[in-house]
Image (cartoon, rainbow, N blue to C red):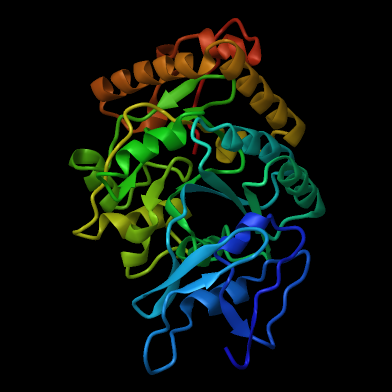
Length: 365
């Protein structure tokens, strides 16, 4: 194509990224080893074709991988060539991200990509991701400048250009169950969006799990009315459904959580089919409940949790604890934040923190 050049391939980025980065761009654009330029992604995906006939499907070969590019509507997109992308936004949790990545690569289904979206990260995060990429070629890294809020607008172009059938999100301080992608895949054959119960580990090791769902009923009504019932971790949707939205990830206005605002965009679409996963597939360690806690303590908490989950049948025990929390939540019909510590079994508290008594859970935020 005259007057254009193909995207460069920064060394820091896994070769797998080339399967969707074979878009033309103006010769004036550039790239560096430390940045996978968000502006380039925007131009490549959002710039419409010039007037005239649509280009024919193009076969792009490289030493790393090959892929069909096809025309859908006014944009150039990529045919799915793998099952799922796990998207992990990150800013300043380098030591926690290391554990999070371990759970992402340990899925029972291997046909996945892991996409780390850096939002103004430091060298410590770059080092963690570079080390992980050396061990697993499925990890890709977008080292982008700091954006407003949590840099959610960065995610828009990455999801649009994904060559996965669906994407699922994971916070950089949470753990992913090994069967998460497997369970999501079973749901997204019938639905456009799905998510597991919102389930947290509170400081001290207590489990709090919500019985709300978004398919119908009270949970859906509350979410549409402005309550935030779900976090980012575990939210999953097909790439095709995302491309149908009038607006995808964008800067979130004040008064909304970033994940809440994105979920609302799906809920408001009459065509959108929303499912649910019956059991937790994420273990969440919310930062808002750990304000002022040194990063070393948070890393130790995640390490103990992950070790317990792997070595002591902890994944299944965690699901049993969460099920008990949800049953009590349904009886009380109170906001999730008011679950009393006395309702929670002590097993996980002892396993994670070594405490003999159950501390007060309080409110997580």
